[in-house]
Amino acid sequence: MYLGRIVEQGTVDEVLRSPQHPYTRALLSAVPSPHLDAQPEFIRLPGETPSPARPPGGCHFHPRCRQAIAACSARYPETTSVSTTHSVRCHLYG
Image 1 (tube, rainbow, N blue to C red):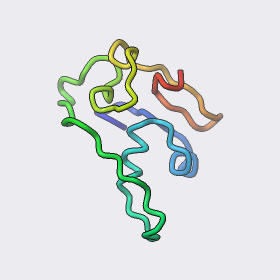
Image 2 (cartoon, rainbow, N blue to C red; image 1 turned 30 degrees about the vertical axis):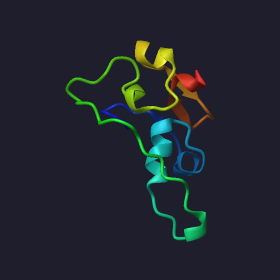
Image 3 (cartoon, helix red, strand yellow; image 1 turned 120 degrees about the vertical axis):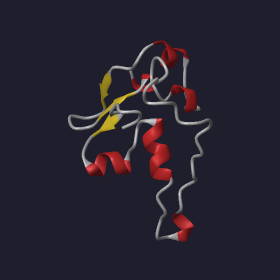
Image 4 (cartoon, one colour; image 1 turned 45 degrees about the vertical axis):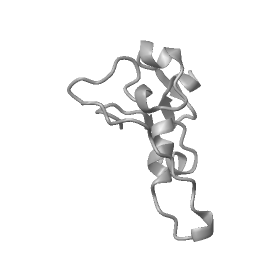
């Protein structure tokens, strides 16, 4: 969830093993690994978190997303099914 909107949902295993949304990937990159040699690269998000009272237009995450495309600022993405139990709201998958 980002600024009050669900960006990805699925089973725990699906979301943790195969995160699709750039925000989900960034969140998971911040989780320390018990194996120091297997620590994933930390994804640092640019900018500041926008105000939930005045979120940006389109996908609320687009100002901080390094993968944002023009559609991201124009409209909020529809839900795209990754599997029968895993879905994502991201223009990269639509």
